[in-house]
Length: 275
Ligand code: MF3
Ligand code: CO
Ligand code: CO
Image (cartoon, rainbow, N blue to C red; front, side, top):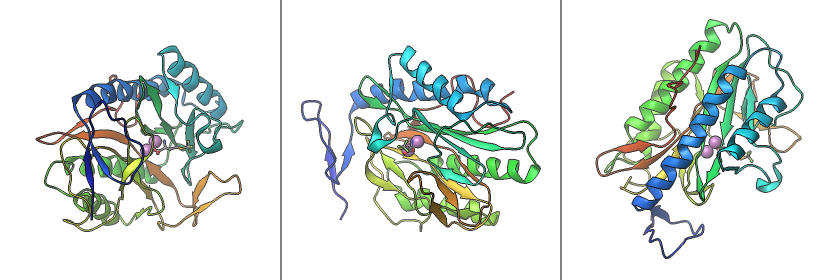
């Protein structure tokens, strides 16, 4: 049975498996944190070019978030020591910034999670580096559409399965594989909270969506099979068949009538090309 708990401001809650139903104060906090996440992803767009190292992007992310009064949630998170994740080509997620340079033809996900005033804003976008082949650009486009189709289903009365099933149906109609091993998640004062937000499933199944729920949707879509494997660094997840993978992520909150997206790009850089 799914358990829900109404969050009251005098009772800060830890992670107890129940789905939190947040009040208006949380929505205000999440809009501010989400905006900072989106502005960070806007800021790096001009820097996502051939020759730049992913460590340089990470440094820009760190400096920008700090300059706005935020802190990257990933810094020191379970031993992770960087300000963002940068996942290139067949890397599914959790790519670690390094001295590796971006090259023309790469498709790259950058995932940022600033903490601002105690609230977590979690968002990622894809970037196209130089000239990217049509096949890869199509994957990126379809993955963005998967995220937005999922968000369209995020409203009271629907279930997590309604969100998941539209994502799965659309991705599989293009003969892409939807990653099972990583999910979206509740968030707020916590980085990762209940519920688990899966990206494959059947309509009408899973927890019902209720006003006050706050969570991410972050589908990872592969040109090939859904299967992933973890590299020896303990973080980097790659496609087993080495096919290209793409991901977009928004943080959203369920309202009485639908949902609010906390991480919309103020600059209108929703999906590439951004130029
Ligand atoms: N931002 C990622 C997410 O969407 C989590 C990254 S955790 C890290 O949930 F430690 F790998 F950075
Ligand atoms: Co997330
Ligand atoms: Co993220």
